Image (cartoon, rainbow, N blue to C red):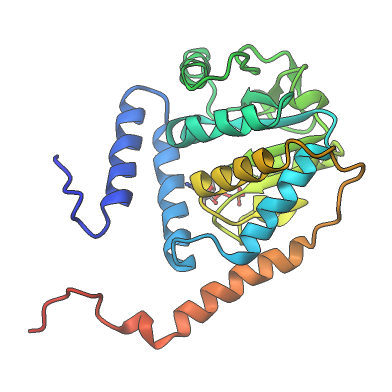
Length: 257
Ligand code: ATP
């Protein structure tokens, strides 16, 4: 289908078409398409923009990545399909950041395909293609990680992650930074630093913050972050938007009968 850039939801339709194509190529699993739909719904409710509280979370996350000794950014199929360029930009802006393929539905072919996309985006070393370690307390494949990456990381950025794994990483004592549009997901609720923002916006802002601070020495400690306030603010925004009279007004351009 040809998409018109004049369609009011062109960007969303474009992203869906790209994800569907990535699913046909085996990069994204069908479950990933459903997860994307859940994300889109929350983005709609949040106003499809970065909230000031999310921007604060992104700045705090950049500072944590700079303070970290062994930070890792975890990449699944949706993240590779939607944001390989942004992942590469964050990795360039934070030398030493590990980029690890981390899959809920793992097959060796899919892990290799994701690594190829990341390498093509400019990430020379991709971890997790042949996982060598395990996260205790998780079943089978979902436990598999790289011994040189997530297994030894002190800070893990986990975009679009499932709640079990987020929880397991926390139990291992890692500082968990989530990127998830759903402030009610288990992932957002267990994360030490939940970023409630759309993936490409969040990674773009994170990269910009890291680029800006590159000439400064890294912070000597992890600044505390008020995770509950960040989640409360996202939920309050959704509540306000649902109650606002604008929520039932016809959209601009809708034809009167
Ligand atoms: P949990 O296990 O954490 O309760 P879940 O069962 O919803 O959550 P998944 O199905 O793995 O977990 O969902 C991935 C999460 O990613 C969803 O909460 C969804 O809102 C979010 N998400 C999907 N696409 C995006 C995106 N582009 N940007 C940010 N978040 C997204």
